[in-house]
Amino acid sequence: MKFAAPYLHLLFILLLGLSAIPSPARAVEATSETPQNPGEASPPSGIYVAPQPLDLAHPYGFKQIGLDARYLVTRPAHLDRNGILKVALTVGTTGILYLYREEIRNWVQVHNDPEREEFVNQVRVMGKGAFAPTLALIAYGSSFVTKNPREKETAVLLLESMGFTGIATGVGQAVLATPRPEDGDEIDFFARRGHGVSGDAALAACVVPILSRQYLTIHEGDGPGLRFGKMSGAALLYAGAFLTGYQRLADDKHWAPDVFLGLVTGFAVGQMLSDSHEKSSMEPSLHVQFSAGPGTFQARFTF
Image 1 (cartoon, rainbow, N blue to C red):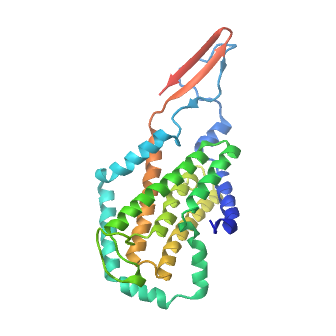
Image 2: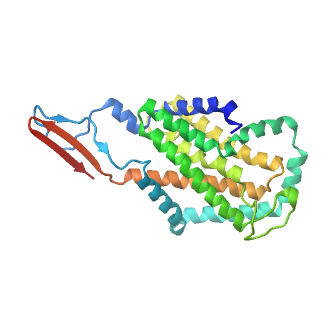
Image 3: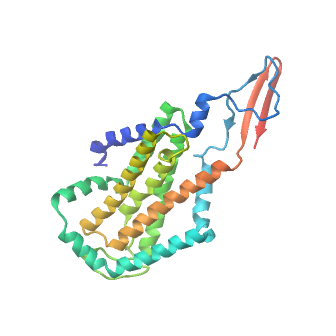
């Protein structure tokens, strides 16, 4: 983890800054008492009711990870019209990039300069294998400060996104086993040690939808300053992912279609995981609420 020393403090500041943005659920907890259903009688005098129900369906538990894995596997079989269009555009764009990959490579190499190369080499930290785990560790640690389950959910989502992206990238590299530009221009299928999908680009892209969903989604009621900050943060994340992809081109380690497929893989996995958690948050979950009084103890379960 050579990169960790100079950049760890930047990651820590980034995560703490994002953690300070209140989620809608957190805002409700801070400004209201336990919600009471219409028509529900108030508890008898002398009976203590816990101010918040205990949510047993944590968005970061093993059950949710299983739901996420099932969603990732089954989602391609349930594409809507918009999803089919995205797949078609991906295939078409990949084909065009293969047709012009030599020209793109030559242009990038001719217009490369040392200063820009040094800059994109620093940005490439997003494509390192330790980047997502470091963010996850910081997010999990910050949960003990914020007391918000969102941070633990973020930590698990980041690790999930990295893991599933790594699997998808490995499969893609085995199917489209093209060599690095410096080693040849053959196009092979189903061979070992292929590089048809850029792993660095995929790893850089897979954290972007997660952080955007958890911290940078614009909600109704956000002020102009907060909206601008969220949009700027999202733009920086996407720029970092694309610059990581560009670095692989400038370093002559991948062809343009390899980088494109890597970015698509990372963005797609991260977005599907975000959609899975969004879907789970909208479904009824198990809650238990305790109340106690003189000689009585009650547990109320709601779904």
